[in-house]
Image (cartoon, rainbow, N blue to C red):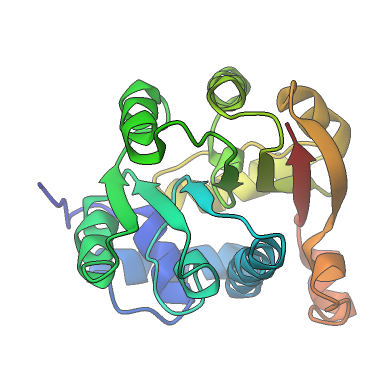
Length: 251
């Protein structure tokens, strides 16, 4: 796999702010520049990872046995593989660094696989998932930390195709960004551009419409899901151009 270390990658930037080591100087420089514009970025990254952990706990308690995780990042300590060690889990990411290290981390887990996939064209991923899961299509779909970096058309197409792939009884976990103020999108994208991406903030109503035919079961701020209402100070909250929400939907 070709790894471009001359440009930052949002997944590696995310890894760095979480305290990881699978990143390069270009990613660390981008993270520093982003934090000048959005100083709370590391806190939101942590909330996103903690939401994954909460979802993993809930799925373990529900007896989930099949998981398809989109834009997984690194399945290091505290990812779904820790909470669902017996489940069949197909991880995926577009970043070759995540895939290479992910394969190494999961080398002794025959019930888990890591696949390089571009969610803008989910056909190869769905073909691999059909082979991986076989006839068992009652799946828990992880979509945490990615939809806010995809436009409406591609997000809608991805989630509809995933719904068509999954059987009734499947569940979707998703996080998304809600703008706070008229200039939120502009401020967010000024920071996101430093990692080479564009961000698409959406209201809960827009998100519910976008994910159809998935049906929203529960949707609230990540700090509410995690019981961390005081995680951001009042000053940090007021200066922050966005809020991050977690959503659980059913097939």
